[in-house]
Length: 464
Image 1: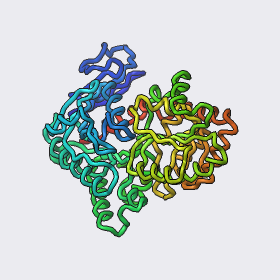
Image 2 (image 1 turned 180 degrees about the horizontal axis):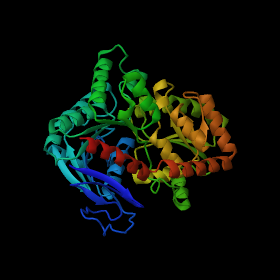
Image 3 (image 1 turned 45 degrees about the vertical axis):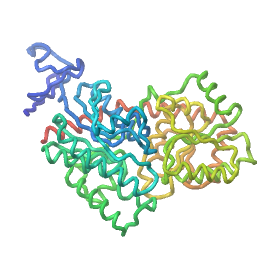
Image 4 (image 1 turned 90 degrees about the horizontal axis):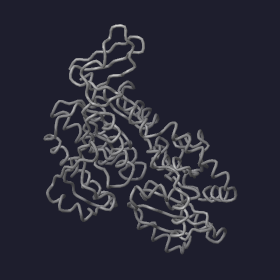
């Protein structure tokens, strides 16, 4: 593949001999739009990339990994790139495959077209995201299945494999190695650091050593590593000795047209359904896992149940800890805490908009100082005040945007104080929400992060 680039006046071209696309017109165009002599063009030509994105999670599954894969694939395909996704069958986090997907799962593979994106699904062992041995069997099954399925897919120019989970990276590397295709490893969680922080596999355990060896292998073999926060890049450089020039930062983003303030009539209807009329509704919306320390929420609810009965807590979602947290709430007689099962993604913005404040909680550990929870960005995009129980990178964003109140992680007294502050001053919450949305639209729209990704991929392909 031959590449060239040049500029003249406002003319700027980047092209290959095989794949040239007019960024304005979209379809491939291997001829110049008009004569060069004496002309001045503002058209920009760029490499049309054939991308294979390997992600265990994909809609209709919920959660940040599935949304990121689907939304990036959509934006890339809309920009004229050829995008395929290699994924599993929907089952996360409950381990239950929806009835309409069970026949397809029994056939082991399935192919569909979503918009302009080709989606290739491959068998995995559907298991709930509760116990470590269940997760590992689920992860390993997708790794092996995807590694084999990927060998027969149409040949891409570049392969991206995204974590979580780490073994997806191993599958992506194998496909890329076997077919001699450039490999990009997308790091959305630091493994095994994140597991150790949660008490899953001590640093001297066999599991920790195995995962560390896999992570090091992938960091060394990847042509490029894409991380979602600057702190991730720092950790890879300092702890894993990854060369800085090998790492690119492409932050998480939000579909700001989807995650936007809901109409007032939809908000009123939902609050009536939740019996939240006249209440100060505090919502936790997302995965209920071991990382989130939801005991902090229950402790705050216990304090406020008699002290301030107008505060209502809503926990919406699924996760490994949901049953235990619900049992704890029932055993403590917390009538001010409601649980709702996972909702379809199109309903989530209305639940956020119906809330007076939204919670983002993680346990107090150094590794979580490096993360930027996607749910926080979605809450901000819906113009709702955030109560953030996370330090580090996430804290910096909320403070820079003046989008909420930051509390010490796992501190129920601080959580109670933040809720009471926003309840006493509703205008403060509305102002924080509006500032948060303005900040997200300016800095974290999914369209802009998808556009930022493409030059990284072009560089990898150009060097191959």
